Length: 245
Length: 163
Image (tube, rainbow over the protein chains, first blue to last red):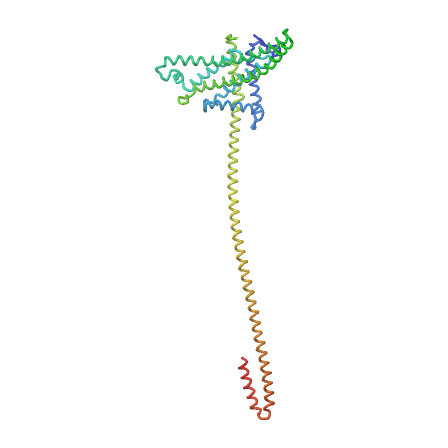
């Protein structure tokens, strides 16, 4: 199951031979924990450097969650902060040669989608009670409940899948594109063709690759943002009272 | 590419949940507390600054009142001093005038006395001269007694005229 390249294997060995994608997600989680640990150990009254970055990030998450959920928003800070960071760093990891984005695996994105799915319904039931929560699936108008209830249930079941496939598709596409460009570069270098054509194709691939990497960086950010924002919207919808809803 | 792997899925969920619990307990709780402490500290500082500002404003008003009072007192003192100066000046002028008048009066008095004295001397001289002339003229006809009476009459007449 271990498909790691020799560079990655040399830098970060995988002695227990866990699946590469799980191993990558552990690396991502370790990076996040180390980051927060450093911030925690250097926490000062007057912030500077890394603490500024973490404060800026967490306050941004708090303000976004307050925008969608009102005063309840900051309560979900650990979930949204970790969700964004985990997806963003996972996406970025694929840009490093020898590493692979955990989010380019459907099982990882589906796992994240399921976390949001269960969180949404857990917090919804906790906020409104079991019957109170499921009541809004049936209407209004309540005479349409036999039709609306299955539609709503299907809609709810589709949500984690849509989250998972959107993220997986975008990140996999980015990785495939980068892989193709790298392959083309090597292919053109060893293919027998006129010198001038060979150099033009090689240069084209060489220029295109960093540009696609830049675009990939942007995609990484946007996909993490979209996933987190949608998670906020879903949970906000579940915990919102009648008027807010 | 789309192979479903329950192990990876569960591993992702467990990794995420464990990471979230760890980050919540290790960092975010402490971070929120630090933010709250800092916000409270900033609030205290602002309140303290506001208090200091209000005290400074109060002190400034007090000083301003004192300054106004001092200014009023100063104006009063200057006014009094000016009035005293004017009074003193008037008094000195008055005194000088009085002294000048006294000197003038004394001088007039002295002049009068001198005049009177001179007139008396003149009268005596005139009388003596008249007596001498009369004596020469009527030496032969008048007795000593008549002569004295006539002299007294002339003196009385002269005195009357002299005044």
